[in-house]
Image 1 (tube, one colour):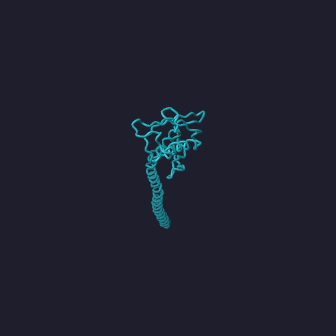
Image 2 (tube, helix red, strand yellow):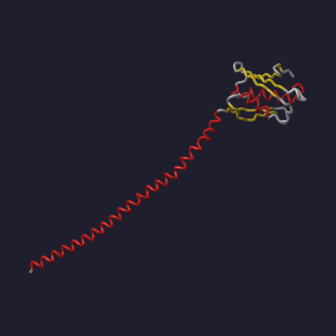
Image 3 (spheres, one colour):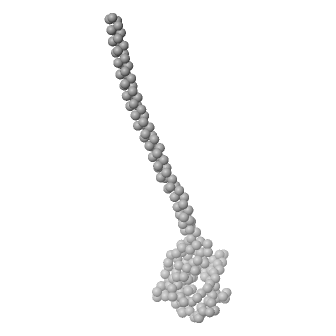
Length: 195
């Protein structure tokens, strides 16, 4: 009987240890599954965060290409222009005053003539013109044409008006080295203009 009681005690002790160990392993499994979930949750939230970041950056990427072409067009325009000084007469009609402008590289001489004539305030003579450039001799010929219906002609210009018309054009064309003009001649309907 002693053996039986010894056997029962050992069996009971073994069962108790087994039950305790199974309880602990259940708690350990529960804790380890909670830890695994906790580890998995940040991993699951990280991709959703990166997905959010990707979705947030996606509109910026789609906005960027639409914003780029106008910038390129604006940046391209200044490379096709050159800075020059346009000359106008001062208020006393005695000196020339330079004003910086930009003109297109193609047709720079013609654009300089047009801008110079635009800047002449108070000049009341309807005037058409044609510009011819001889690049070998660096000479510009400006053929001035007053419409037949005009009340005035080039020969009726006052001294100040002559200075305004001829000197501003001559100084604008010869005073800007980028235009490569050494001399300017004026004609009236193809004939030399003598005032």
